[in-house]
Image (cartoon, rainbow, N blue to C red; front, side):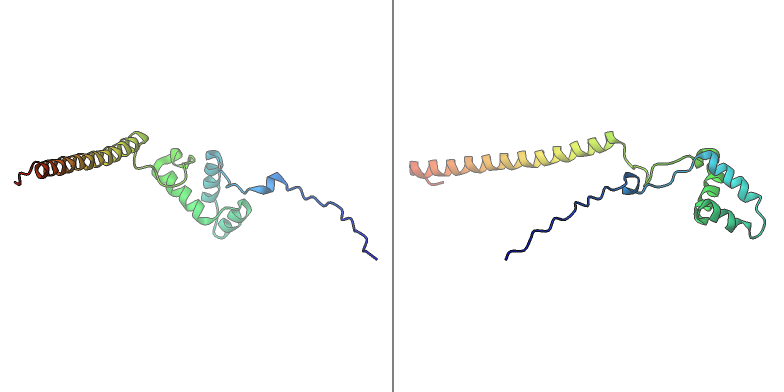
Length: 134
C-alpha cells in the first residue's frame, strides 16, 4: 500500500528590510559639539557613564576632540571614508591616455620593424632569383 502524500504548510519567511543591512551611525555637528561640552563638565568617574549612555567609544571622543582642536567646527563635519584621492579624475584620465599612447607607439614600432624585415627578405629573395649574390 503506497504512503499518503503529506502536504507541508508553506512557511514563507519575509525578512524585515530594516534588518537587512546595517549602516553606520552618523553624528551631526551639533550632537558632537553638545557631547564635547558635556564631557568638559564631567567630574572624575562620570565620563565612562556618559559614554555608555550615549553608546560612544572613548576613541571616537578623542578623535572629535582632536578634530575640533585642529580645525574647529569644520573638523567635526562628516568626511568621506577612506584616504583622500591623490589624483584628480583629469589626472587619472591623462595617465590612462599616456599609457595607451605608449602601448600604441610600441605596437606601431613593432609593425614598422616587421615591414622592414619583410622588405629585406623580399630584397634577398629578389637577389637570389636574379642570380646575383651580394
